[in-house]
Structure formats: C-alpha cells, structure tokens
Length: 424
Picture 1 (cartoon, rainbow, N blue to C red):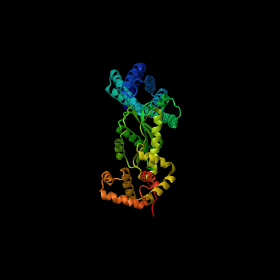
Picture 2: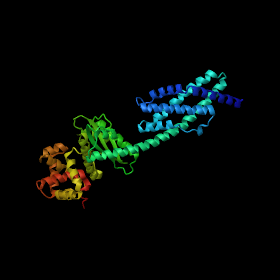
Picture 3: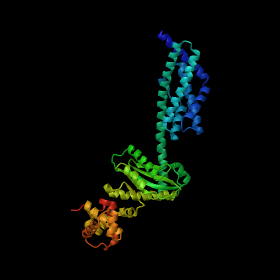
C-alpha cells in the first residue's frame, strides 16, 4: 500500500510538472512581479530585472524537468542565468541576502501554486497529501542545492569585483593625494564620493599589534561616528591602507561652518584605548581633498612620535600640533633642541612634566602668576613655586633664548619620549 501510494504521489507530481510546463510563462511573470517588488535594491534597475526574469525562467524549467523526468536533485546544477544574476548582484553591491530571499519567496509561490493544482485534480486526500509532502521536500532540496551554488558564485564575484575596485580606488587616491591632474567625474565614480565639496581628512589607526579585519570594521564604525559628531549627512570615504590603518574623508557638503573639535573628542573619549585619530582642517574641492589629508598625515606623525603619551585625537588645527609636526621631520635635531633649551627639564618624568606644563601656561599668560593659577586651577603660590623650580632646573632665565624655550616646551608636550631624556 505504501509503495502504491508513493507511485500515485509520484504520478501526481509528474502531472503537476506537465501543467507547470504549459504555464511556465505565466508563472515566470507572477514570480518576477513578486520578487521585483519584494526585494530591496532591484527597483528601477532594468538590466538586473531582465536578468532576474531569465534566472526565474531557467530555475522553473529545471524544476519542471526534475518533476517530469524524476531527475535526482543531487545531479542538477544551477542554471547559467541564475549564476549570472548572482554575479550581477555582487557587482552592484547588493547584499547576498537579496539572493537568498528571492529563492525563498520563489519557493513559497511555487508551493502555493502546486498545492492548488494537486487539490484541483487529485480526489484521493492521501495521495494529495503524499504528493504535497514529496513536492515540498523536492523544492526544499532544490533551493538548498541551487542557492548554495549561486551564493558561491556571488561570493567569488564579489571578492574579484572588490579587488578590482580597490585597485582602481587606490590608483585614483594616489593621483589625488599626489596633486596630479585627475578628471573629477571619473574620480567621483571610482570612489563613490563627491570631490566637489568640503572635506575633513581623517587618519584612523589601532595600536593593537593583533589588529584584524574585525579591527577595520571597528575603525569604519568610528569614522561614521566622527562624521555624525560634526553633522555630516553623507557617507565618509573609507580606505584601509593595511589591517590597522585607515585613510578617511568626511564629507561636509558646501557648509562653511568651522569643525567643532568637542564632538570629535567626545567620540574618541568613548572609543577603545588602542584607537587613535588624526585630522586635518576642512578644505574644499580636489585641492582641499589633498591638503586636508596631508595635514592629517602630519598630525599622525606627531601622535606616532609621542607613542604611549599620544592623545586619542590629534588635530592639525592646533598651532602647537603644527609646530610639533615640523619638528618630527628631524627628531634628532628636535632632541638636541629640547636638551639645550630645557636643561634639567628635558627629563621624561612626571615631576618634570608638571613643571613644563605650568611653565608653558605661565609663558602663554605673559608671565602672570594670577592668570596662570586661574587657568590651571592652582594656588598662586603653588604656581610661583613651580615656575621658580622650572627656572632652577633649566639653569638659566626664562628670557634667555625664549623662542627656543617655547618651541622645546611644545616638542616635549606633543612628542614626549621621542625628544626627552630618561634621566639618570
């Protein structure tokens, strides 16, 4: 009885396959409408919609052959049109989720249609149930096998396409940063980023030696957060140079507003301790794209020279950072300058750092003990003690080579152990 039931169910599935073959065009149209409307990212893309129709038709034809001729699903390969559809999705950056969703929705439609056909023509409820169950198993097996194959095609094409795109992006970025003549429209197309606007150049990096692709995703999120903090509504340009360093540009549109550092600092305060950012100043157009990036590079040089004492955010807009950046071009000369100008204050220690910081504020406040005390929240007598102690450690009056003294204090503050001595 069981074998007879299976034979009748098999015959019913074959009969449904015959009907499906006759109605293939109508089923293709119905499924095409369903998928075109139900999958985000396909609307309005006529070439991909035409290829979707070809993919649907070829999959339905393959299913008809399986039903009519009892072909084993394990012997079936994904249709060429279905594979090409998967590759086109990859090239357009449409998520593979859309690919899988198409097969699930398609299966749902085919099952509903087939159950109606079985119910319409099969009077024996046992046979109808057995045929429906067998057809459900068949379609699940087909979708499982074919979707695995087309996703494989998608992933392979996506990897190849990204590698090619990154090669083109790298070449365009190299030309822009080098200041070479570049066709703006071509550059914008390659980068998916508008050059004709204001930009803020950003460099992000992780000091974690074990940084990985997961670290790059973290840096990408950080770049997005920095953009939001300064009111950018556009998508930043994100370009990894290795697994722990990223070049970025935050789009500012045509706004002439100054970039407020407080928002950026707040983002970096929340970031992991091993993450760092260096930023340029906002600048416009192709030349500005280059300049703000070069400024961010100079700010990064300051942070890298500072090593463990580097701030999480280093901004080229700070005059002291600009001065320190010039000194990084010759750290040996900077080290000699610091030793000569600071004397005993050139030691890399917390007591010396306190004296240097107090002295630097004192000089910026034109030698006023009162103003210095108010600014650093200390008693006036404490400030006087520290200044006197700093002069003693230096070994000569403050007015002796004053310019070198102020430059050395900037170097000590921003470059840290790279220009200070370890002491005895």
